[in-house]
Length: 111
Length: 115
Image 1 (cartoon, one colour):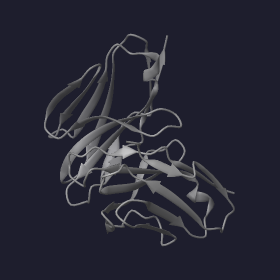
Image 2 (spheres, helix red, strand yellow):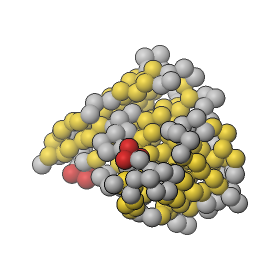
Image 3 (cartoon, one colour):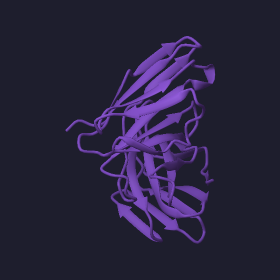
Image 4 (cartoon, chains in turn green, red):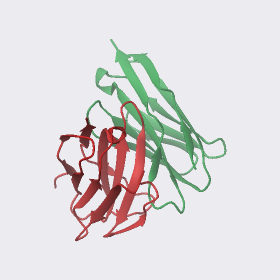
């Protein structure tokens, strides 16, 4: 099976930068996704990495190192609306197209 | 067009009753997924459909759970003889196809409470 770990909670200040880490142990890695989920709402897609390196998309960037089984989501210029849970999910080969999710990191942005 | 929709949004049922949850995927999306999210937990994969077939049912927690999809569109997840541990938010997602780069779009979920 897969094992995906991410911190349970983080707190950061408005305007700052925060990095949310995700480590995974899996065989047949076939991509890593980050989703944002506001309380009581559906998860929404943020980023997808399948090759090593950094993917930048506006204030959000995601990094992947396949050899280390490690990814991070970087949020810059934090806004109050960024307070949400951030879910790391891994897709593996020969497992249909299912995503295996970590427990999520609840980020609280304070003024 | 519209996003993924699910009904009902909330369902309270008594232990032992059967419930049926519905998912309408985005039009044209051939792949459909069911997940559940217990309070404060991550998402747990249940089952996915490519068209009307479900190649992988291994995520279903017990034989009380079943799902079907007809016409390559709407899907229903049925839980028979509900138990309190079935209480969770049941999320449906769809994607264009079951390809590795296809983003999954999630519906708002059905919050199931078994009393």
